[in-house]
Image 1: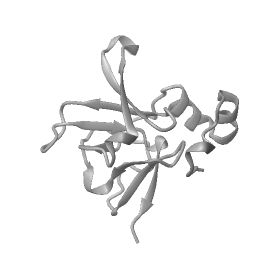
Image 2 (image 1 turned 90 degrees about the vertical axis):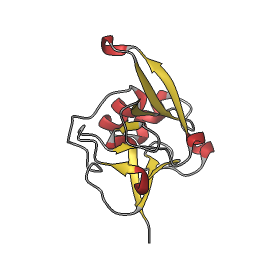
Image 3 (image 1 turned 120 degrees about the horizontal axis):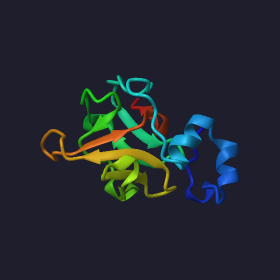
Image 4 (image 1 turned 120 degrees about the vertical axis):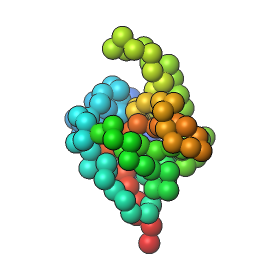
Length: 136
């Protein structure tokens, strides 16, 4: 249930809870993680764009998607870097780089330095955080 306009972004966690499923809320708002190989967007091979399921911002394009074998949708680059922010995540005794939607601050996943060329990056993203919009 994505939203398109930035002003539609909920201004409280209660409002987020009203519009997101329990799983979406856990991942987007509480930085949860879907189980490996469970995401419905993992195996998508069609052309199209991946949008934030919280606010609809364009995040990744199918041309940037690749099979990392990690169990989560993986991209070697962002569609629009302005729509993505990174934060240091020290949870679970690890130091990782969290990826969030710059527009609604929803948790998307993490970025690692073990991706393919040309970027060497692996954006490891929860399917639940994304909505896929196929190209016509």
